[in-house]
Length: 343
Image (cartoon, rainbow, N blue to C red):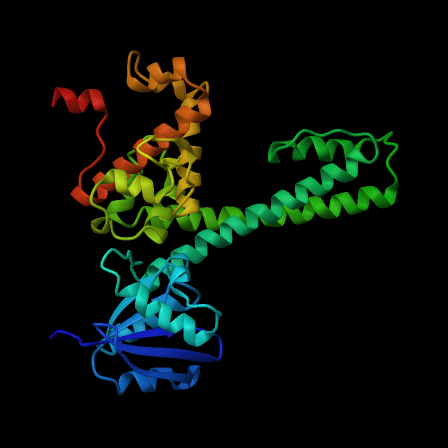
């Protein structure tokens, strides 16, 4: 049954602003509703198209509205901003959401399931612990630097730091060494928590068939596979692998005008976590150990001979993104190009 009403919802912590209009844009009603009464109000409404910005709690409310029989569309906030008239307020935002959603060329965000959001929280929790551990390691290095001890960057330098603090004839003050040992204890605690979450991620990545197939791609591990499952939309929303790579921001940013094409650095649009992990995985294939697996006279070997390593890594990450799209869309497993050509 076709729906004749579109309701834009400006989400907030306490009060939601609603703007309802017909499919041709004629306003029907504007209403402010407390958060506690929103679900009951929408349950009493005829089936409609509900449009919200893809912000905090949007995926939860999207699932709730779908349960009530409504059709839900989520829009990225930066696509709504150009449609806000003059002054910004909740009513203007709700109206802009409806106007933006009625554009035929508008792109929407797929609502996430509860499992996707749970995996995203696990992934972000691990990333947060890694950042906190890095901060603690830098704090210890900074404290030692104040007393003339220069320690290189990297988590692998913790043993060297411990040796400096435990040196018998050390000129470091006792109080300073106590504080640094306390920081090392905090680092050890963070490392243990990171390892626990890493094991959870590996276990989750081994449960689904899609994640297993993704890990057959060189440079793609459990973290990348879980990030794709948690953050990437359905691959059916992309026409081809190039569109998925462009969504990740692994394509040059354009400054073209007047028929003259100007390409700059990568756009860095889309999902940053997947893009970062793909680039890290690509760099792992280009180090001294990973280069052994690169066939001679391949496109990757030829590019490495002509281009800077970081530029080659971006190109390889782009190809990895297109391969991910193909494997998920077609349900295939990765095959080495030489073996695929023979087959």
